[in-house]
Length: 361
Image 1: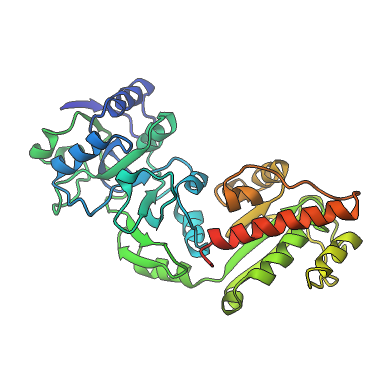
Image 2 (image 1 turned 45 degrees about the horizontal axis):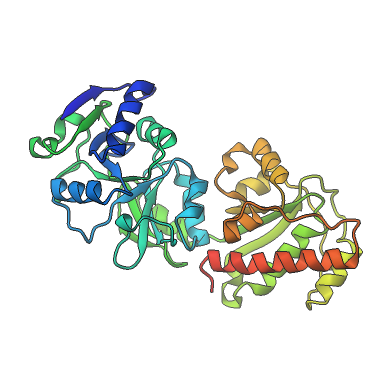
């Protein structure tokens, strides 16, 4: 095993590159995280994953954790994201929280449990974050201890037996928090605490019971976002209606404007009376309170993140969150009745996708 001292606050590029080289060659690497020291392998290398299980003596029924660099990357790997899980991600990612989701079809099989679930975490420590950001492979991780033994908080605590199977140890001193991540199963609307770690049970329970908040944003809040709000309210399960706030706003909206005439007409054909809707402007307080912000255009997303940078990871194009496609929904303002009808059909189809993505089917 090679040991490389590395700056934990500002990891040297050449040392990160060496770590990436080891991973790409199917090697096993140890490094500090915000919680404890971890082991990492290329999750798409069956040989590397098998070797990690053997070296660590880890039962195969206990899957590895996928480390991601950005919260929004989760869309590629999960089938559903309950709103309660989105709220936890907003507050505690990057950080000491591991969430278990129903895995998508493109998730690496090496990381799935027997139920087809995947565990994901976004670490806050600069070393694993830099490894992930500069890497072109998926990083499967676990704690750097023999199964059943205490997790190490510094490199010197990694057992001699385990070190024999490690190719590279990045020694970044003591870990930041010194306690394992909290693990929560988020495969349904009700969160299930699997392991209480740095985040206490009380925090998980509080966030799981909190009322959800979904905000739709377009330009003037008289057409597309009104349609989306109205359709989601109509399709939202009645028994869950008191657990969520669904509303809309506009990037450049005038306060108190009614929906456009054509918007009202096409919604009326769907049995929805939107005549009482009044426009609002997307502002800091509403953006902060929302668990999920769904926009129609890339410009809307950019302007929201400029206004509220902490919103990264909870602001998505409507189509992106519903289907994974980073496509916009065009503004029908000034168009024909047919253009409004087509816009409504497009939004309705994606609202059905939102219902599915939130695990409400």
